[in-house]
Image 1: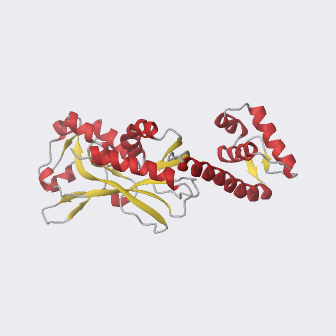
Image 2: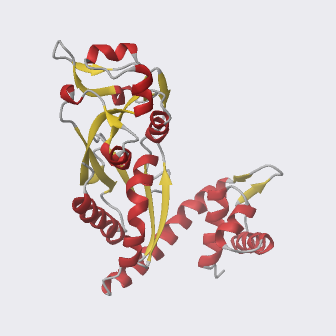
Length: 300
């Protein structure tokens, strides 16, 4: 039969991208070459793996069964490559990383050049999502999560923490006034999260010594969207220091109600499955982030 690794990777790429055209682009092949490779694999297996229509590609039952084995084969090859690289103390292979868009943009991306310089044999895939994801379903190796963790099946390593502050642009405060008391927030436009609602717990204590939970005047699912809304003068927002440091240093955003703000820090963890076969790659990235964030920090 002599199935090749290229044929298996081609099949997986077609499934993951949803089309032969996109798979060919991902693999840097021509569409005809990718199609021939898929056809050759099906011929060797003497079965149909995919149903092709004008609009989409669907897995057959045989395709579903073969896909699981195919992923195991590729993972085993990647693991073998990494083991050989580890013998030379050089982690290698693909590492798929997921983080919320603001953390990816403001923390991870600026550190990638330094990481790549130290670990040039690790090929990175960076994905952004606003909520928690299933690591296996999304084929993610390590996720960087902000806030308290709930999933006990995951191994977690702390990489830092970041303080929350209430902020607004000078233009907004000039137009609408600066609140001096927590109760005055009811007269202002408040920028908050659509979900989860716990993100609308602000680090403030009101006159009755109670914590403050706000109902957003304008809601958004992404912290980066809320940041941009605040910069454009749309209201008062509560965001983590890691994404607002430059804004605060340049005066584009200023802290609101500092005397009523309590010290609250969001924990930031790297999470991954305990039985992962790519621990050297994960360790290289997580250790680098811990060192880099420890040197620079978020608070200013």
